[in-house]
Image (cartoon, rainbow, N blue to C red):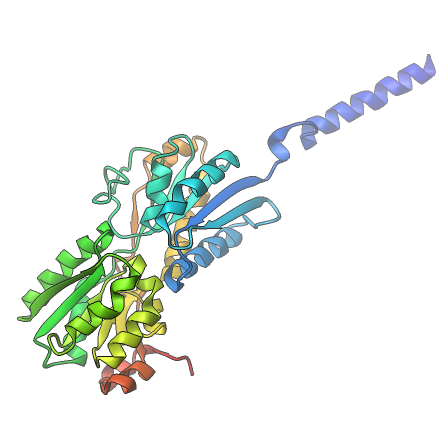
Length: 333
């Protein structure tokens, strides 16, 4: 009898311990976060790093209390649906979609998993959400709408005599088309002529740039995924044609563009991580994301001036000292 009583006490203690420690329950499982990144060029890499670092600062560390499944589409839209399926079937509790093709693929695949995007210029115009203030579905995130006016102003600051500016972008990217309209308005407002130049894919970059030589005074390239991924090709052709290229973000300057005043994608990623934490800690994650406004980096303090001094030397441009005084310069010294 004594043995049975002792055994009963031990079993009771073990049951109590299991109640408090979650024995045999799924509560001890780590949170699964999927990341679909469209390409691996600097802007998207920085957004990715900012997101992961932001989560870690909030106490969500990969390999400890969360598991991150990162997959890249290698800048090929055709890869996005398959990656979306993989992350959904993996049982992701939340998915980060970096760039428009990524989130567009996820929109077609799930309405039950919270999805955050980043590096998307105009999520409403792209058909991703219905409203920036109240998205209303399972998707929200952060926009990389860049300060187009300031970037066009920079053209006049660096090339005061510029009269004609080409806006070059990939015709299949809706975000770039929206930025073209913004740039055209700003170019016209400064009394310059705007020339539209589109490409269908990277194979057309060299001939497109060469066709502008002698016809325009500068080229403006917005945050276009196709051209950002192939910026070294753009820069080589532009340098040969002695064409200054103002870009939509600093990573493109690092890879050969002349200059920009652009947003900080690392900071954008960290802002998106804050949104993720709000969703993960919410009583109803889907309701949280449905009512979560899209984040925009609208303050000048969120942006930086960047200049590539090697490019300036290659095309014979002298960058004004007042620009150099405030700029991050590439190559890094």
